[in-house]
Each structure stands twice: as C-alpha cells, then as structure tokens.
Length: 591
Image 1 (cartoon, one colour):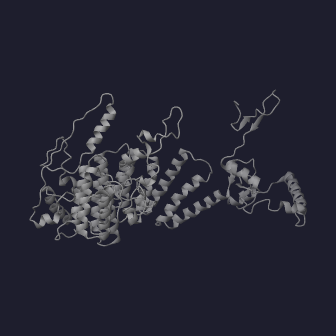
Image 2 (tube, one colour):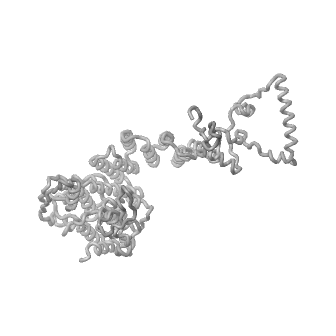
Image 3 (spheres, helix red, strand yellow):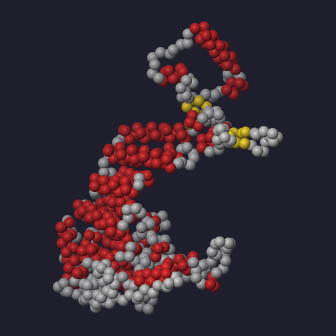
C-alpha cells in the first residue's frame, strides 16, 4: 500500500470486508531467518551493545580516569531504588530459589555483548560464525604484519575475504562482489610490496583483476606486469590464456606473436638454468606446453600447413639431429643449431612423416643431399553454389576444401590457389623451435604430437584421471569440435528408420533416438587411463582408445603412421612400438 513500509502487506483472508487488515510480512532470509530459527530452537543470539546502554562500561573503555556520579536528591533516590531492587532480586536469585535458577545466565560473560531479542535490527546481531570470522580477520591481519614475507599468510588473508562476503547467508550482489575484489587487490598490492616478483601473488592478482576490469585496462596491466616480471613463467602462461580467450583483443596474428614472445622468454630462462635441475625440467615442460598450444591454434585457425611444419621441425630437431650436434648451452649455440636445421628444411628434401623420409641426420651424412619428392599439383574443384540453398551449399563447399590434404607445400609444387601460406619457410617456424635436454620432455613431445593428431597420449595417458590436468585442460581437450560425424550420428541422426519419437509437442522438433543407442561404447569422447585392453578393443564391444584417425583428416592418416614408424625405428622404445602396433591394427588393417 502506498506510504507504508515494504514489510507491510494486506491480508485478504482476514477481516469482515468493511476494512483492510494489515500484517507485517515474515522475513525468512539472511540474518532474520537465523534469529527466528534460534528463537524456535532455544539457541540465543548475541548482539553488540550500543553506546549509552551501559555508561559505566563505556566510560572505562573510553580511557577516562574517573567515573562520573549523578548528583542531587534525584540521583540519591535513584540509587536507593536501585539498591532495594537489587536486594529484592538477590533474594529471588538465591541458589535454592526457582526464580534464581530461571534467571541464571541472563547476561553473557562478555560485557560487550548481550542477548538479542527478535525485534532488534539486523546490524546489531553477531552470530557464532560471524564472530569467528571477525576473530579470524584479526588473526590474519596480525600474521601478515608479523610475517610480511610469508606468501601463504597473504594468500590466506586474501581468500578469507570470500568467507566474509558469504557470511551474510544471502545471495551477494554484483556491487558487493566487485567491492570485495577491490579489497583483495589492495591486499595483494601490499603483499607484492613485501614479496616482489612472487609468482603465486602475481597470478592471483591477475585472476582477480580479470573479474572486475575491462579488456583495455587488463591489457595495460598485463604489459606492465610482464615488463616488470619478464621471467615469471606462470604469469606468461596465464597471459596466453587471456590473449586467446579475450574476445575484444583477440586476433590470430597477435595471439601467435604472444606465443612467440612467451617462448623467447622461456628459452632464455632455460639456457640460464642448470642442466638436469628441477627448474630446467619445469621450464622445458612449459615450453612444450606453449608450443603445443601454438600448433593447435594454427590448426584450428585454418593454418594447418604451419602447424604440421612446426611438428615436423621439432621432431627432426629432437629425434633425428646429427650425432655431432650437442645440446646448446647458450642462445648463440642454439642459433647455430637452427642454422643447420634451416639448411635441411630449405633444401626441400623428404621430411619426417613423408613416405621414404630418412631424417635430418641422413641428410647430413650424405653431404647435405637427400631424396627430393616429385612436384605436386593441387587441384580444387570449382564452387557450385545452389541459389535455392546458398548457405548450405557454401558450407558443403568449405567442408570439401577442408578435406584436401594440408601438408606443407614446396616451392616446386604447383598450387592452383593463390595461397601464400601453403609453402612454409623455416623463417616462419624458427622462433618456435627448442632443443630439449631432458628425456622426460622428449617423451612428452611424442605425447604432444599424439594430442595434436587427435590421439590418446602414450606416456601421460597411461596415468590419466578424469580430474587430472591433462583431462581438464580446455585448450587441449577439444575433441568435440572435431567429431562432427560422431555428433551427428549420436544426437542428430538423419536416418528415417530411427525417428522414434520420445518427446514432441507443438513448436518443438521431435527428439529422435540415436542409431547407436545400443552400442554406447562407440561414443568416441575418450577420458580414461590407457591400457592394453583399450588399445586393441573393438569399439562395438568395449571402450577403444584408437577410434578413428583423430583430429586430422582421413587423407592425413598416412602422415601420422609414417611419423610413428620413424620414431619407433629411431628410439627402439617397446612401449611406443606397442602403441604403433595398435594404431596400425585400427587404421591400417591390411598391413
């Protein structure tokens, strides 16, 4: 009703019809709900005493050196009345009196608190959880002041702000969340002053800032952070995630440039690290991760030739290098190794993955000579767009073009299309190359190639769990985007023989049963540890780790098989040989 409190409502079920019955609406959310529950369950809530409710206590806590006494007969009469009342209550509070038993504990031990009544305001109440949160805040504040160099103490203090925000017991607003995030950033600013360059604090800072800042402000802050902390590896990883997912600032060329800058910084840090140290192994692992992310971005953006060329060069450098080439210990030595690899690539002899290729070391042993492939001639069928279905025919034409093999072309090849990216020069891939000194990193390079090809990783996949980092990385686990055939067969079957209606009503398309409903193992989203049974399993009977050729098109299956065969011959790895045998059984059954 106009003019009344929002808590007042009209009760239409009461009254005789000659007037309006007004009642106060019950509030069951937030702190009031806890008060009502406390009253019903017998639990008593506390609230903070306000100024003036206990003048004596307030005087002592205010730091005054005397207690003011009321003067005059009026004060004397009040003191006598108070004394008589206390004497009467003293008799009633005798330990044998029932009244005394009932009134015992009427005031809490803490003189700053009192028991709350149901009519009190929300701001007066202190629940047990809220009181604990306040004490925790005091403890964390004291700890960061006493130990300013403790990163864990600062992080605990920052994370505690979420507990304070949630302590109200109600849904928080955007303004409250933004205000809490700003408080966190202020705390982290102080923490970085005491612990400059700490990776955990820097990453935490940018994670929180991304929630409340716009894209332009984030980009400015990222540039500042990376300029001030160029060797913080975790910060670079977080930065490439931001650049690849930020809608406003994303472009393919800028994102690839970002990956290149990251690899340049990581390469310099790896050269400074001590060989066979834990730091160097960690840096090399991150280098491989960024390289894989770069290749996947190239492939998904349509630059498949560049992505395949990047893996060809990386495999040649790390597995087929001439024996006289040692692991570079400085950036200058690294550049000399790349110059030799440049000579091999630009000679345009057979490369790893191509039929008849023998590897870089064979090229050097033959005096920088090797087998050269015959010139290839690419043909593209003319577009045939249907005027009655222009969009559908355009999609079909694009899919046909995507089905054409995308192996890197050579300068001698005749490319019908005017596509400058078909021929990949070494200078295009130079900044992404790295020579791994750690054997574990080299095995992960094989796993990276398998992930790039849409296959299950071999070494890491043997211990993969559904909650592990390998299984939950959204930048690596993108099989659903490459499984159009499976998705159509499962969720949008075209066969009229399976149009069994499950759900159907006006205005909605009928849901159809998938033709593979009786064979659930044929759904090819793989997320399980690798085992021998799964390598050689038939998908119609059991879960198979080798369903389909993976992310590459069917025409490129030969490339994957040739790479695996060359690696098996070169490394003499029994585990890899077993994997290659299972892959051949699935994809080359006639061989």
